[in-house]
Length: 416
Image 1: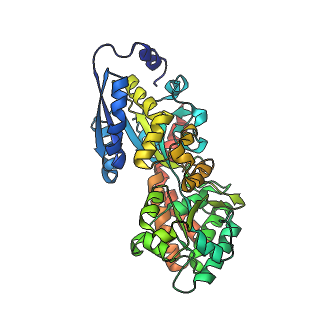
Image 2 (image 1 turned 90 degrees about the vertical axis):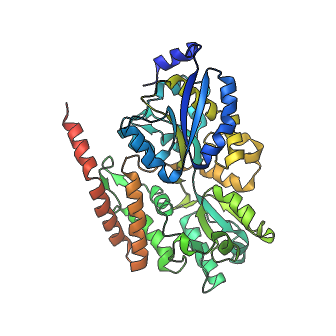
Image 3 (image 1 turned 30 degrees about the vertical axis):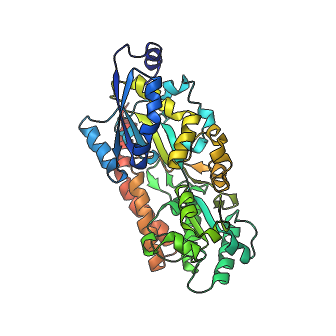
């Protein structure tokens, strides 16, 4: 645990010797972070930072391989759904004490659902770096033509708006796009329920519960009633062009598409689209708490310097600059006071949504479960399954994935 020892070391730093700190950053972030960390090195002359950019496509495998080989870096960027897996391996330092003693990191300033993705069994294992959630992008002109002067605020309004849009646009066009190669919309609807996605401390699937069946049925109904095309995103020639020509009016996506819509939509449509928080069963709904976090590797010999880097990258002014460079949304409320974020009408819905996000189940097996949700719901759409059959198949597959987890938890409970 990084606690009193780290805080004491922070006072003396690490002497006159130069510390070489290795930081693994993923994808585009790996290109951007050296621009920011020049300032970190200027403020911390005893640290030299080596940033390695890791493509997202190989990042998960590389992290696991490096763990086995004892070659993990000092600091790493992790997708926050990977934290439980790396924690189960014992790869992550406990940052609880360091965070509690930090002036730079204030838990209360973070959106609670994002902060929760980094906490397991009461221990803080990472600090959110940026947040990724999804909500509605919609054609305001089409919605207005269909008789609605505001975006849907709950499931009933969303359903009514979808039916009205479909009636308005006619055959060959649809109300919304729900790509069958994605699992996020299904998970978001599932997280909006009082019944959890998994039950008994993540030992079993809970898809046959009343709430989860309700979420499945709501999702399937858009396909069953011809309101969404039964297609993957790759089967749509060009999402932005199809949105522009009115092939669909609603699209659940993330903040990265704000810039894409601005660049790719015709000039005469720039005032005819907007973003809105995700509707819930009885009002504004929760969305998934995605994004990336910064972690310190447990075997790092430079944990104090590693945490200093995390503190630097967590400063609101640095987060605002990071957003300007990357488009990645900051996880701290104070960072949203920056004019670039505060005055952007398309970003405002994300600020609202971030107050209502929840983490996916925090277990090592979640990535596999998410893929099964995608596979099973796609099959259900194509074969016309009802919610009960879909839920039963999900429970069967998920229970099989969780068999080892049940065994390990039972063993742990037997140990005195």
